[in-house]
Amino acid sequence: MFALDVVSRVIHIATAITLVGGSTFMLLVLMPSAKQLDDASHQRLSQLVIGRWKRFVHAGILLFILSGIYNYVRAIPNHEGDGIYHALVGTKILIALVIFFLASGLVGKSSKLEWMRKERAKWLARMLVLAVVVVVISGFLKVSG
Image (cartoon, rainbow, N blue to C red):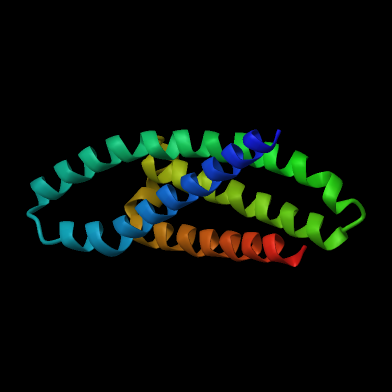
């Protein structure tokens, strides 16, 4: 079980690094740089990047869910009766679900979420703030014992 515990943790953290890092790059580097392009080039670049990025987003959400469930189930015996731990994990899970919704909406094609994609930078920034909150909660939970 130890090897599976390590693999699950590495998958969870590597997925976070990939998705949060990629989203940060898009918000702070790619999007401002792409504004320098003419409109047609900008639109084409956006289509290409989102078309490729959505594969990472969807796979990452799946990996987060699978590794997160496994990690939580393995941690439960170590935190019986620890109300603060479970409250923070519950908060982290709820925030993660919001992040999954935002990430999916930003790479999706649903006309009902077009309002989000029209203000991509704003929603991406909000999503990243929530991701930082999840990382802070995770760090606290890891060191709090």
